[in-house]
Length: 327
Image (cartoon, rainbow, N blue to C red):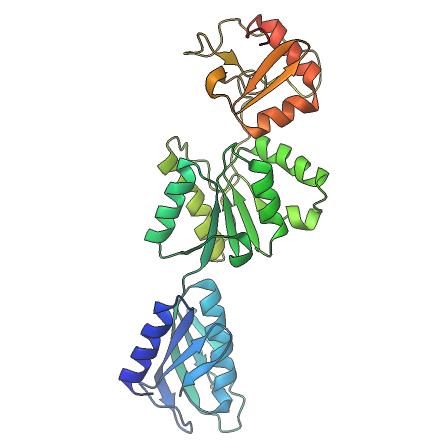
């Protein structure tokens, strides 16, 4: 291909969101049919357009280009039988398949927009989509279209969204959630019939423990986890175990009475016995009646936890001496 031809084809591929790699020959030692400055485009499926040498080099180049597309990282590749002892560890080496023993070095520059599906209508989900666009990550609408899914529901349909993500072909599912909440959701997914192999794809929390508070900060930390996976890095470092949230009783043992004052700003609100959050009855996401008392919940997870052992959380509620009578 001429320079104009491969540039035009590269623009067309980019315009339709296709992933490809530009391969340029940067060194050619005879005998080889490649020449310095030759270009080729390799598509994600291995299709090659252009010329970077004969069959002796093409197989290795295409394989290396497809790996570069998958990782999103450029690389320098040497195909040779020369016994060169150098410390250039950044060079990826392949054996020349032909008896000619020529040498070809190519630079592979991937152009890829890894697809991400963000599930959720929360402010953090909106911020994650904006940040993904800034990072040139292609956004898709359904988990079946993306290799990685970020669940950013934050209490608004957590179980349904996570179920859809884990049943999809997505290779990784990240979720904005605490470790405690993630553990409860894993149990809920098992109850829905998901197996350990499906659950092994779940990473929650989605990013490192950075003390994020605002939706934009939470989204930024979650995108760190997404980017780490897309770049083939290990997952974010393990966060420290979380301290029990206010109002959470231990999993076993007697229920300890809690101060009746409730969290700051809780005047006139119902104190969620699961997480200790003050919930305004008028805006509560869920209401459940138990033994003549209405319990108001801020998210799906708290409601599900309460329903799993209502007597325990009713005892917490009574120990506080708080709450509102049934309607």
